[in-house]
Image: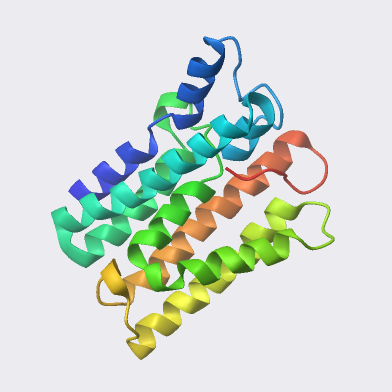
Length: 204
C-alpha cells in the first residue's frame, strides 16, 4: 500500500502544468491548446522544444523515482507497483479530475528502472515505428513498443537474463509492463473518444 501510494503521488506531479505556468505565466493551458494533452509532445508544440524536453524528462523522472521509492518500501515487487501507479497517477490524476496525460514518459522511467537492459531496444523500436508511413505515428509507436516491452519482460523473467540495476526479474516484471501498457492504451482510446474521429495523436 505504501509503494502504491507513493507511486501514485509521484504521478500526480503536474510537470506539463508547471512548464506552462513558467513559460507563459499561466496564460496557456495545455489541456485546451494544441492536441489538448498535458504531455511532452504537446508542450513542445505549444511552448517550444526546450519546454517539451523538460516535460518529457520530468515525466520520465516521475516513473523512475516512483519505482526506486517503491523498491525501498517493499522490495522488488514494490518497485513494480510504484512504477505502475505513477503511470496511473499521471493518466488519471485525482487533482485534475482524472484528466491527465498518456503516461508514456512515466513508462519510460519505469522501463529505465525495472528493465534497464532492454530500454535501448525499446527506444529503437519506438523510433523505427514512428518513422513509418502511419498517420498516427505516436499511437503506432506506443502500441508496438509496449507490446514488445511486455514480451521482452516475459523473456527476461523466464530466462533470468542479467538486468543491471533493475533487480532479479520475477513474474512481477511482465505483469507490471502489461498493466502500464493497458493504462496507456486506455488513455489513447479515451482521447480518441473525446475527439470523436480518427486514432489518437500525440503521446506524453
